[in-house]
Every structure is written in structure tokens, then in C-alpha cells.
Image (cartoon, rainbow, N blue to C red):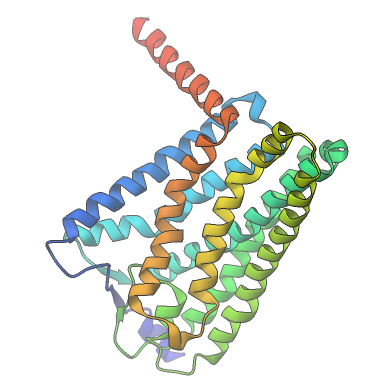
Length: 318
């Protein structure tokens, strides 16, 4: 186990997005804005759902979980990226790298499960509305949320242990802007067959099973919507799940491209673009996607902002 004591002292270097000093200030502004959009938008939605009693339903309960998860998601990778873009250190310690990898994979795994549960919730609401309150009662929603968070974080423990036990005696420059499993495996100086097999089996099973459950839910949902006779009824039913469907397509599409393709087909540029899509851009866009298409959320957000504004005015006049 001497190599474990040696690798624990390694400082890795993140390649980042660009080595061109002229481009880095522009990239810094872009990703800072995206990060602020993610923080402000998701925090607003989570706070609104918590404060508005009308939004204390299963659909918004899981949406609140997604908002909190997106805050964690972007906070794992973006701050270090912003630091390197403004001339800060691009080095990351061995323990820091493994911690970043653990929390990143945890968030990714949890979101796979959460999106499938949100799809199931829409399936029950549209296809079995008479039993919706029984099937998706408060206690079951809490159990589901607890189970998916625990499953996501426990799954990440396995991936992190298998990655951490590898000896890293090649180049210490990670060809990415954060510590992820595929670029880490390229630096290992031992056989990584078991690690790749774990990604395809454990990770693939989690991702594909979640996507399959979501796909089945939406096949049933679309079938039920098409049976609705009135155009207004079809439009109303579809509007309740359209936002979630957009998020599902973006997330599962990018995840599948990143982890389910052969390693021989991967490239640094493609990996970075796809990673930016689901790790940075999607958390920033989720609040926009859900709020713009949801009148109930927009109305609740306005009421929450007005309450906060008038409460501040009242306190300042005291």
C-alpha cells in the first residue's frame, strides 16, 4: 500500500478550457453569469416552493429537490473553473480531486434517479389521477427522495474507491476542467479494465434503468394525452410535463454520449463541451425552463418576491 501514501501527496493540474489568455476573460464572464443564474434561479425556485403552501404538492416537492441538486451540481465544478480562468492556480490536491469526483458523481447519479421519479409522478398524475393523492402521498414522496439521494451518494462511493486505488505515476495533468472518472483513468499506470467495466455496468445500469423508466412513463403519458378529446385539455395536460421532458432529453442525451461510448471515440474537446452542457449550462437553464412554462410557479415567485420586498420595507421603516 506504499503507492497509496505516495499518490495522496500528488497535486494534479487541471487543463481547463483554454490556454489562450485572450479568451479566458471572456470565458470567465460567461461561466460566472451561468453560475450566478444557476444559484439565483434554483435558490429562488427552492425558496418559493418552501414558502408557498399552494406548491406543497409532489410535483413541486421533487422540483425543489432538483433545484437544490442543481445548486450542488454547479458548485462542485464551476468555482474551481472560474479561479483558473482569472489566473488562479489550476492545481488541485489528490484528496481535493477525489472529493470533487465523489460529489460530482453523487449529483449525477442522484439526478438520473430524480428525473425518473419526476417522470413517474407525471405519469400517475395524468394516467391515474383518481389515485394520485394515494400513490404519491407525502410520506411516500419523502421515502422516495431519501432513497434516491442515498442511492446516488452510495453509488458514488464505489466509483470513487475504485478510482482512488489506482496508482497515478504518469502525467499529473488532467485533460479536463474538473476531476472526472474518464480523464483520471487515462493517468493511471495500472490496468483500468475493472474501472471501465464498473462505469458500463453500475453507471450504465443506473443511467439506462432511469432513462428506461422515464421513457415508459412518457409513452404512457403521450398515449393518455392523445386520447383527450379537447385541444385545450391536451394542451393543458402536455404543459404539465413538457418542461420536465426537455430537461430529461438534455440530461440523458449528454450523459449517454459522455459515458456510454467507446473510449477510442472520445476526445478532449468533445468531452469538455458535453460536460459543460450537463454540469454547467443545464443547472442554469433548468429554472428558466420550469418557470417560463409554468404559470403557477411564476405567480408564486412574484408573491414570494413581493412578500420579501414588503417585509424589508416594513423592517426599514421600524
